Length: 445
Ligand code: UDX
Image 1 (tube, rainbow, N blue to C red):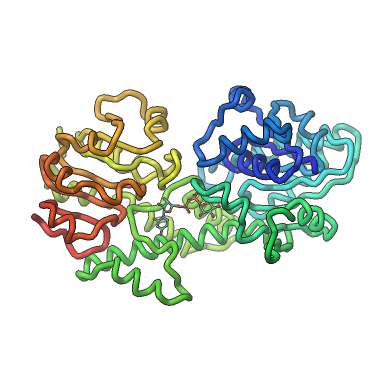
Image 2: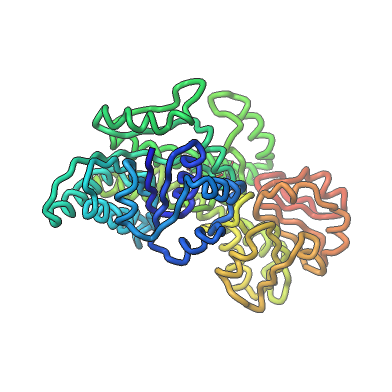
């Protein structure tokens, strides 16, 4: 089948590459000339394990192409995916400018039936606005061609995006037209094996499903973070509590890890956007506000623990940071907890020496050259002569360091661990004070 994907960002590229991989003819269109030039010359603008190989293979096979021309895009695909960004507005609601610009281009250029697929995470009601925009653009062109708008939200996780797309838990198809539901079902058939994962529902339900999933996961994390603060206050160990409650299958072990707050492009933005949507309909979503507020407070946690440990005296200190990305296996630093921490440390006059397996370049892009940020090549180079070590991202390669070597390097032998990677006894055994999240107060060595 012929598929056009507008937007060569995270979701667009993964969707395009995976749909090409199963034999479709895919054309990816983006207004960013540099990005398309990069893709055409063999580069990939984002870091995602396996994506570069998948793109190269499908380009080679002639199934995946890139263009900046919307007219070519509209002419190409029966399916017109909209996978452009929806950055938050000043008030936190999703900005639909890019989505509606694509809708207008489709309306302007289409000459035969098209299925327009909303893949971006968009507020409830967007499909209707897309349809209106297409109709208006057609009207201005003096033509009226039939089309349908489908909501088909994406649930992929950064770092595991290809696997998530290839083996999805569910494929949500929101449409009020059964015939369009069948077209999407056919497109997704290669990913819908063993048992039926396609769920066809009304457009608004599909749009809300995406926000509901992200808000539920964010709620689990904020709940655990809240509980970790209570655990500290009462002298309990949140890691034992986590295992204890996770054993109940109704609660489950996934997504109940306490830490220094969730980040990324989805949870913070989507929780806020859903809250704004509710408010615009006259409903005050107290729980969502609390999820957001708890996360915001949790992002201050590492700094306040560090400040407390050094009794407010951070001027001139050097903190080694392990992890800059908002989570492992990505170079994405959007809303990463590391950013809040670094900004607080700098404001207090401290220096940061950071190591991240892939996000250093992104940090350089965000912060440029500054005297109080040093980006180093490996984890031990970060601790060399530093005052203390802070762990911000739960990269696997941080899980079993040579703690004695770390101890020997630090001026104050202390680890602040925002992800609870270690057994406290083991860290203390290496002669280090261990300050983690929600566990029995730090054992000072
Ligand atoms: C998320 C959803 O998982 C995905 O389904 C949706 O489509 C987009 O948003 P992603 O943003 O890639 O995906 O990240 P995810 O792996 O979900 O992690 C989000 C954040 O939560 C990270 O900062 C992570 O460190 C944090 N987290 C996760 C916790 O603090 N505790 C947990 O138990 C799990």
